[in-house]
Length: 72
Image (cartoon, rainbow, N blue to C red; front, side):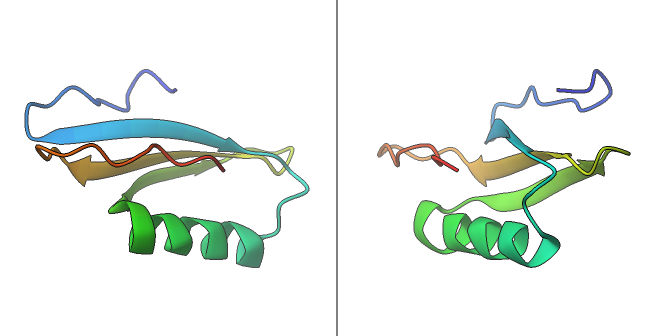
């Protein structure tokens, strides 16, 4: 995860993801939308690299019950 992506918070939990270059923008969007719908995640940051890969940071409010992390 890039150093400037601050992910320390008492109210939010974060998870970094890496999407390889062969994942299209539409496919990436659909995968992230599914995580948002069923896992409670929302998009925090995206960084696109010259090789076509993406680093994504998802966040969600911390809750008392556990929801599994995304398996993208």
